[in-house]
Each structure stands twice: as structure tokens, then as C-alpha cells.
Image 1 (cartoon, rainbow, N blue to C red):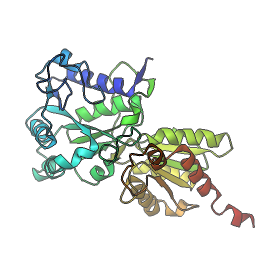
Image 2 (cartoon, one colour):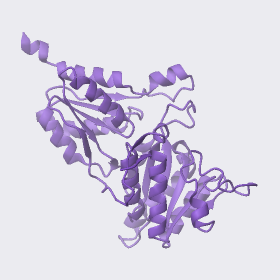
Image 3 (spheres, helix red, strand yellow):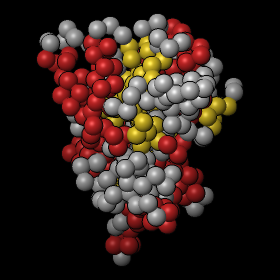
Image 4 (cartoon, one colour):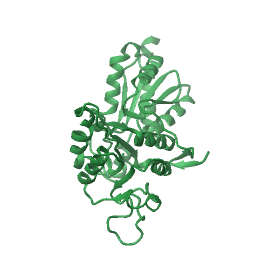
Length: 342
């Protein structure tokens, strides 16, 4: 099986779905080289070159460059979806969601409900999130919890190239609006990805490690750090189950609760802010549905409740690390042990 980066996997998913269904179009800033820019119109392919090569293959009618107006082109994509197309809009950075938020949460998310289930809005909004590229606080936030809060939206946060391809194909085929969140540090991460088309269902978590001592629930890129922490701890005799929810809405609560009932100890890892974030939401869910199984308080490992710093040293401290995850796992594993020994 060939190895592909996250960037290649997403590009391949877009191409395969555009070949399969001529209603699929791409829309966004610089995805085909820049609106009215001279020279090679395929020079960009978006800020991370994810759509590079697609415009020459499918033409300007299906790969549409837009002016720098998120409210305009996200609104246009939502309107196009409501009238029969299946647009994939690229919102350069999730930080720009505020500019077009009304179109998303007040319109697209409500169409199916307001029209009694008769309206569908098959739009996908691809966007980048996450710190680590020294892009400062305007381009580095993890805002998927904000979108998860809104009923009517589906929110996808893939953790690797295989997941990215299968989840994006599912997103394009879905009849509801989907926010597809890609961590900007993961675009060059490689793994084996099939050439053929495949779809990963929403709302079905993936258990990436199995262990008896502690459950780690991690979101997006944090899954990879949690896997590293679990592998390190296993060498020390402490085994962890790692759960990748894949989608924050719908959320696979059943798998999370089942693993907690098996281990009784939980660490939740999320790069988003701690207040009203996914870590807090999942911790609350566990307290509500699996309290009797807990042998220790649920531990959360998150970024601090502060803007993402530009200073490289501070940004590195800001992002949850393998070391912090390991420390949290040890803390919940040790909880109550000394008292029991006495």
C-alpha cells in the first residue's frame, strides 16, 4: 500500500469525489492560483497547496477562486448546496470563522430543521486549525468546539492521512453541512493510504491503542501525541487505551463510556481552550454516564485559556506535549494508590 501525506490524501479524496459526482465543486481563496493573478493559475492550490493540480484537471468551472471575502464565498457555497451542488469551500484558517459565522450557524445549520427535513445542505467547509507554525494568535486557534456547540453542523477532526481521506469522502457525500478541520502541522505526516475510494462513517470512534490501566481520549493531532505517550508508558508497565473520536459532532459517546468502564481512569487531551472545550465536554459526559466506574477524577490536558503566543518558546509550552500527557496518565494511575497501600 502506498504511503501518502495528509496533503496528498485530501487532494486524492477531492479528485475522486469530483470524478464520481460532477456536482462537487471547489471554492475558496487562491485554490487555483489567485483571482486575476498573472502567470500559472495553478501556482498556489490554497495556502498549504492541498488543492494543487485539481484546477488543470477539472477546469475553472469547478475550481473557483474567490475574492478575499469569507462572508461572500462561504455564503455562496451554502447557497449553491441548497440548490443542488455539493460545494467544498476552503476557509484558509479556522480563525476567520467569525467573518462568515452568521452564514454557517444561523443559515446552513438550521435549514434542515426550519424546513421540516425537506431541505438538505451538502456543503463541506475545509479549514485549518492549530498552533505550532509560529503564525501567532490570528492564525493558530483550535476553534472546533465552537462549531461543535451548534446543532445542525457535523464537525470532523481527522488524526492522520488515512482518516483524512476516508472522512473527507464521507463529508462530501453527506447531506448536512460539515466542518472539516485539518491541523496545519499534519500536512506532511505520512502513512499507508489505499488508492481506492473509501468512506469512514461519522460518529464511530477509533481505538488506536488498547490497555487496562487508563483511557486517553484525544482529539485530532493530539491522538498522535497520545499514542506516543501510551507507547512510552507501556514500556514502563502502564498500559493505556487511546480513543480517537474522529468526529466531535456526532460524538461516539458509547465507545468512550465503554472504555472508561473498562479502565476506570481517564485523561482527555485537547489542543483547544479549556473553558467550554471538548476536554471539558467529554469529562462532563464521563461524569454523567460513567461516574460509578471512575477510580480517579478525570484529568484534562489542554492549552491554557490564553491566546496562542507568537514567541516560539512560549508557543511550544502552550501546546499539549507527550510529556504532559504522560504526567497526567501517571497522576490518575497513582490516584488513591498510596492511601490503599496504607
